[in-house]
Amino acid sequence: MELSFGKLRMGWATATLTCLDGPGFGAPGRILVAVTGLERNTGARLEELGKGRITLRDRWGKAPVLCEGVPLEATLPYPASRVRLFALDEKGRKKEEIPVAAAGAGKALLRLGPSHRTLWYLAVLSK
Image (cartoon, rainbow, N blue to C red; front, side, top):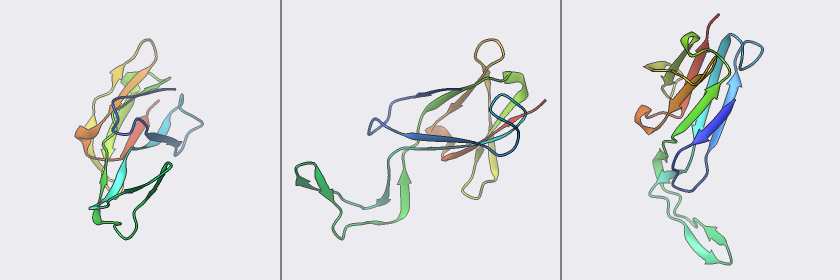
């Protein structure tokens, strides 16, 4: 498994890949992918207090929560021809299939990013 993040607003992001079934990333099964970067409430405002300290005071903002779309390339040790990738909606339903590219012999390249307008993806590895 290899992960490569693109340009990020704060220079960091998180990616969580969870095998929902199957023995691991190189075997048939489903993998839930959650990718997050900068998140905040609409209208939230940070205040610098000096010496590396910050506060929101009473300016927490309100809905909706704004989330950075994170560009990520993930390489799986599995043939691309046997991998399907889906962007999921906020309820976990498939909303769009995303093409999977080959990344060398027996490897699949998953390209995730802001254009899919989601934080959640599902990779399905078939036999």
